[in-house]
Image 1 (tube, helix red, strand yellow):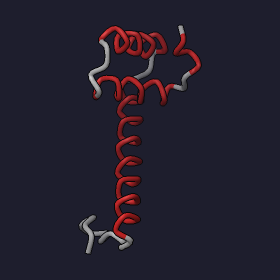
Image 2: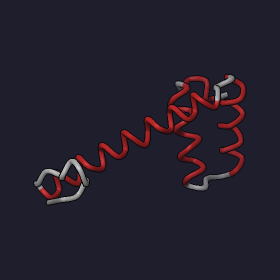
Image 3: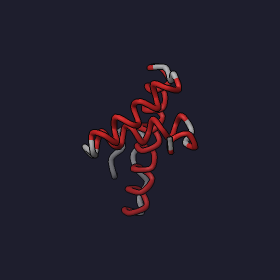
Length: 80
């Protein structure tokens, strides 16, 4: 199967994004089967998703800050 070259983290992120974008159910099923085949624990999946969310939040704030050329208020994450 073509997913064997993906790291566990990338496999989980791919599965998460495929579900989010409502991609083909057969493709999502193949990703899920690979996750199950590898025996990736639910806690590992949660950890990767949490890490992805935190990274995306950080990147979002960084881009927003650069677009406005003003630093975000660290307490409220709003533009002053």
